[in-house]
Length: 321
Image (spheres, rainbow, N blue to C red):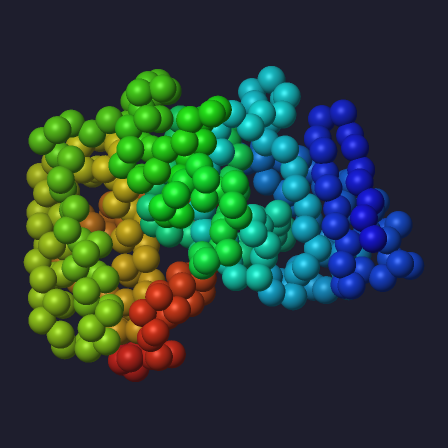
């Protein structure tokens, strides 16, 4: 059963699954048409709030795999007119459609994301938000069944990918460069002398996690890179290039989030307290509105790395104080 509701400022498509019985369809339609096409920064997102029960009788914290009813809201530009000139393709969670038509479920207090946000994709969302560029977010599942139209435009299948009108761009570095050149104000360009700060941290992190050994030698390499970052921030901070965050910061902070969340869970590893500038750096960036709008729950990060590296539920048990 399919019903569509049209409003002058948004087009919302409702696909009703077995979760919504016929007798609930009218209630569900009213609930969905009441969704606010609320502009959160640059990206419009759907808000279900207290209407969750109408959409299948499930609580607001329903798991994505059980949430088979989707809705889609057009992204709006500054004048309020729908626009799809900028579209970013990121990774969708398994079972949410390909492409996923329901990208995020937002409750009044707690956000439940149903996609695995790679740090490379979040970098692009962060910079779009920081530049106040309206954009559409589309999520594609990993695997061999990516849509043909997506593979035709993006033969590698890698994400993030960005579509700017008819132009497609792959690779987060190239996408960030394109955005900076096309939308230079405000500038997020990192001075050349600071562009490589922290660039080895992510590789050291993944090597350590993949080793599945809390005392692996890769831990020492990771600590060495974190110490170098901390020393740089103490000398040049609070951000990599000084008083204002730039592209290098928005590239690094999602990686640090993945690092601290996954290593704390699997390896009982924590960034040393003496790296005070790094802790301040993380706090400042993660408290920015752009980060909060593009962040995902820790659980999604933990589950994402578990699947990627075939990790057990725990590698090192947390030490009690």
